[in-house]
Amino acid sequence: MELLSERPGSFVDFWTERHLCVLSTVRADGTVHATPVGATVDLKTGIARVICSGTSHKARQIRATGALGAAVAITQVDGRRWSTLEGRAVLSDDPEKIADAVRRYADRYRQPRVNPQRVVLEIVVTRVLGNA
Image 1: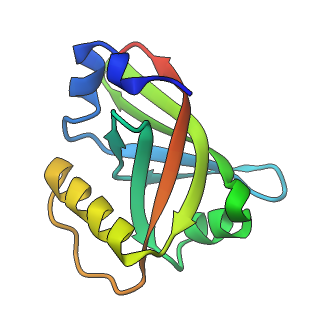
Image 2: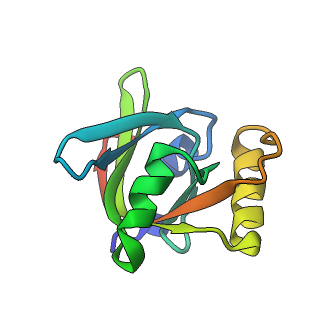
């Protein structure tokens, strides 16, 4: 697992500034599903989080993979700066984990709208690419 807490300050800044991201997953037929998301990264634990509706394609796809999770990538770009975080995502509908993810999202972006079907995708980051 990549130690995100040891990355340079420019990386930390890039993943705390407000940037939209793209979450990429692989469908059962092998094609890529890419969708814009807001993502947060916990540098100490190496976990990235994406909140979404439990009925979304990404949530259903990751839920179907079970405890092993799904291979995913989260990318953000700002001009020439870019970074991709790769890892395995699992879905959680645990209210405490969702509340924590919502708090992190609100800190980076804004308070999200209320969504009783909200879940959180937790991604254990295993690889970091980019120049940020």
